[in-house]
Structure formats: C-alpha cells, structure tokens
Image 1 (cartoon, rainbow, N blue to C red):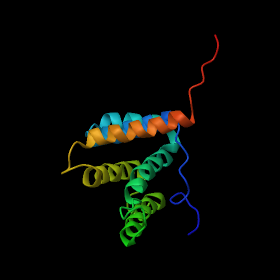
Image 2: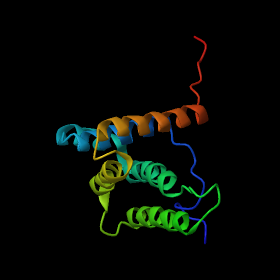
Image 3: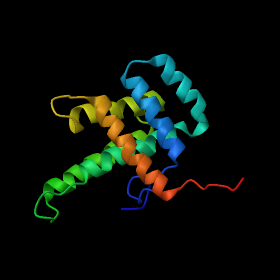
Image 4: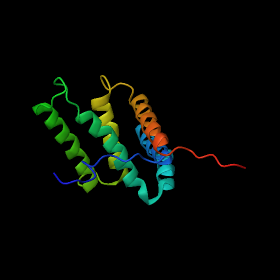
Length: 147
C-alpha cells in the first residue's frame, strides 16, 4: 500500500492546533454554534488539516488494535481497514466534506465507539485532547527566553 496521510506515521501536532481543533469539536458537540464559528474563524486555512490530524489520532489507534495474543488476525485487519477507509473518506472530502462534517464524524465515532452506552462524550473528548496535547508538548516543548 502506498504511503499517504492515512498510513504514514503521525507527526505530533502543534499544541495550539490541538487546543483549537478540540475547542471547535467540543463546541459543536455541546451545540454551541456561536463558539464553534468563532473558533473555526480563528483557525485559518489549516482548519481541515488540523481536524483530519485529530481524526487520524482518534480513528487509527482504536481500529488498529489486535486482541489475538499480540498476533494480527482477520478481525484486526478488518478493523484497521475500516479506520483507514473512514479517514480516507474524510481526506477525500467525499460525503463528509468541510470542518463541521469532519468534527461531527469525530463526535459520532467517539459517542458510538469510545464511550460505554453513549456515555459522556465531552469527557472522552477532553481525554483525547489531553493525550494529543501531551504528545504535542513533548514534541514541541515551550522554550523559555531570558528577559
């Protein structure tokens, strides 16, 4: 399979990008359209890339699990293929184009796959944001300048 945004290793996101992307996703999830619009306006032209980066970090680890004594099995290949397919649909902009479509897909995936009985989606989104922020901060540490 050729390398692409779906199969290539994920480079850490910038901390600001993690914060902005999740602020937008959480605002949409909460139904706060005014805040979502304000956040997305401030994200600039890279909004789709940021949301796709988040989607990759949400979908791929969940669908790429193998639970067969550490050995890949038919189900793990199927799950991984499903995750890549979903991400490819978002990347290609097929029926889910635009920032709201990507964000709502992340929210639905979180609600249906990552929570127990459609539990606290907002809490799971906060946990995903914290994990993304941790990775971003480790990759892009804040440099203190002397005054």
